[in-house]
Amino acid sequence: MFDTLSGKLGEVFDKLRRRGSLSEADVTEALREIRLALLDADVALPVVKDFIATVKEKSVGAEVLRSVSPGQMVVKIVNDALVEALGGTAVPINLLAPSPIPILMVGLQGSGKTTTSGKLALRLRTRERKKVLLASLDTQRPAAQLQLEQLAQRAEVASLPIIAGQTPMQIAQRAMDVARREVYDVVILDTAGRLSIDAALMDEVKAIRFAVNPVETLLVVDAMTGQDAVTTATAFNQALGITGIVMTRLDGDARGGAALSMRAVTGAPIKLAGTGEKLDALDEFNPERIAGRILGMGDIVGLVERAAQNIDQAEAEKLAKRMAKGKFDLDDYASQLRQISKMGSLSGILGMLPGVGKIKKQIEDANLDTTMFKRQAAIISSMTKAERRNPDLLKASRKKRVAAGSGTSVQEVNKLLKQFDDMSTMMKRMNKAGGQEAMMRQMQAAMGGAKGGRRPF
Ligand SMILES: Nc1nc2c(ncn2[C@@H]2O[C@H](COP(=O)(O)OP(=O)(O)O)[C@@H](O)[C@H]2O)c(=O)[nH]1
Ligand SMILES: [Mg+2]
Image (tube, rainbow, N blue to C red):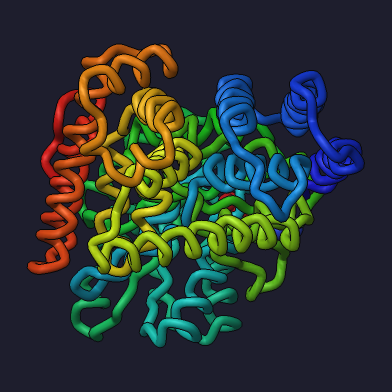
């Protein structure tokens, strides 16, 4: 799985990394090759387009950190885009519900529902210490219920006694009754598949879903079916509303496109990955780990992350010290603006300050306008050293000079000075009163607020 994609991306990056600096043409060429590699891996076209657009935007906007090469920077950007496409963070099976927790397994015939039911039972018993009951609602094939019973024995969990002639609905209700009476934590309901999506299948599963109200409705799809897996997931999701996807046969030589497209196309997270026929071949689907495997460049990704952290941390500490001493001048303000523009948001540097972490996300959401920061940085660089240290020197004629030098207006210079003044006042207050959240609110207001109107924190 992912081998071809991994190989191709490896070639792209080998080329990039041999260069000391990157021209726009280098990046364009690399993006073209990445695009081809993704399409070749069977990733859905809209997903490829988004992916390339994201990488392009980030690559052009990124300021290369001192200790890493441009090629390494691009590796990191592609890595992050892969993680995002794969769903961002791992989403665990939801076990936060009153027992017995019903988990409904759905999917096409042969996708791996029954096998996965057995694997999941084993996993929940051994890792989560859950008391699990397996029940087969597959009355279509004579051997199906026996298959699950055998899997239950191997996983050392209970299975619902088979009663011939019952309908899937009767079996589901009996399973829930037994689970309540015998105090099971989890009931896994394995359903019958069909060769293709048909109304009868959906109606049967819908009725069961309505009757037992499962905490998880897990769709099992075969990774080897490529784009069809994505189509199947879309159809099941529209008809039933699934809570997660289990992708099986990730051990095979599928090209991986389904895994990369699934989240964007269906919106449902891939929660688990089947990686073999054995009962313990079921893994949590972890986007970071999988992106790492695809790129095979974990060391570089780590290096860039550490470099970014070090620089920001050093700046943040310096700034925090100056703030604490009440020595915050226009040079500090400019250095902060540079950081902000580089990071694309206030969160970059402020997120490093102690206690700000938790509101970092909210700042990011506020989507600050960085072009204004760049203009302000230009104004400050048109001032003399003395003016930057002591803004009170800036009277009318000096303001005119600074405005002309930076290609702005006196009005803009005034606005900047007012913002700087507000910020200094706020910092003094912060030193006295503490209160990070209040500080952030004022800092945002001082810097002109969010693009689309001010949002409350
Ligand atoms: N290699 C591999 N085979 C799998 C995986 N999951 C299921 N299978 C195999 O796929 C076949 C069909 O599985 P089954 O659970 O009966 O599918 P169902 O019809 O959806 O219940 C069986 O031979 C399984 O051993 C997997 O993750 N990797
Ligand atoms: Mg089955």
